[in-house]
Length: 603
Image 1 (cartoon, rainbow, N blue to C red):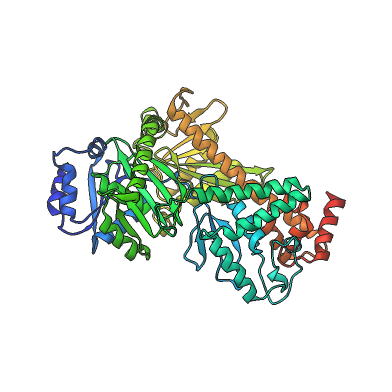
Image 2: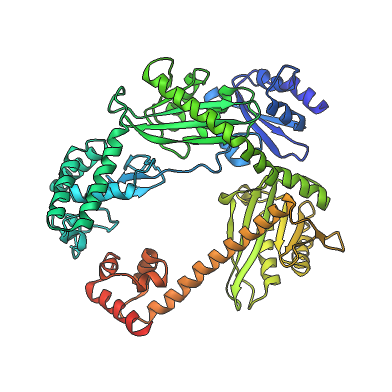
């Protein structure tokens, strides 16, 4: 604490970001401040603080800070550092679900419409998110039924292609076959965009006509499909909030806390229609509610499209967020602190959802702590590890008879999977089925990234876990010795008896099957095995597919790659229809027939 006292005296009266460290120099919290000197001192004064903040302060052994030119820049940097370090006491949206959108690719001469979960600044127009029982697939079908716009990814070139089945059943105007001009197609696109903006009248009228026609022709299955689509449109229309402007796009965000745990609820309104919402249970240590809400908003909209308006509680840093979106996100978003009217009622609804979600989630959060952070602490005690194993990496090898050998690296942080950090390795130097040598190659390649420019992507782990027994452990320890690595713990987990081997104990360690620390090791080991197997199957099936396609006359390297990129597996190509094959670049009708005939005769 003497170090902290001295540093507190040197803090500047400027905006910036502060970084709290534990005794192992792990980053446990990142915060932003308008005045660093005032904010950081708050943590170490004897004033009353939330319980979670007091728990965090007990673990702080040092801190660093970065001065920025403004509080806006500090907010942006805080978000970046949270993503980088994944601090234990910050809000982390690891399990955040990304909802589907419908994208119109307006950069093309003949725009297509498709489902996506990723929002990009690419000139396309995005509609959504869609939730609450509204199917994007059904909406796309309505677009093709009503406006004959194309849903495929086929590249349209000056050379006409053969029209597909959708043209013959009047679901597409076949611009790829030059069956419609650019100007005529643009009219259809305009109508489709109006539909996605909430104008359902034309589509509703057409669906009713088609439903009645199908029923008259006794095609009851088709009539029922049209009826279901009409009901979906009615559901969309019924969710319209009559007191709101028809064109309002807004998210309503409410925060609730009991000082130990917190929850946030997000209600989503598009074109005046309540699309649905989502709630998040949070385990964080912010010094006040305004900071927590601001941090959530900046993280949430890093992976979600921001609406025109965000409605929040009155303690929110509204002015700061207004400027943040304009300067750092490049979009003007109105942050509204609603105190009356229909917007306030929506905010109360979000607050009620957040409170109910918090009440139901507390036991789950406590159980999650036992399975993750507390399991890491327990593992440190049992195995006498020198430091808390915050970042754990587990490695496994997969192959069949030495063919298509691959290695996997999975990463757990504070006992939870960090899937963005997973890595795969193709074994390059080992002949035959030699798992020991394969592990040595993988670990050598990984450890050589330490203290290089690549360490940003491959941070130093606290603990490395090997899927295997004493032999695998010894093989990897040789690499540790060869590279002079002494500050990373190493263990292996043998599956049969669930024995744990360490380099410094002669006997294996056995932990009770009921112990959360063993369950956590089993999770990371099983995840490494799953990840290795999935990678092996992927490259093995593609290699087999390559060799099979080589046997079909007329399919060269370019067409093989086109087929592999489109279908991915041998089974999908074998079961593909002629129309599916024709939608692959470079595949003619004659070649499609040749592929179908080959698989019928040979497989």
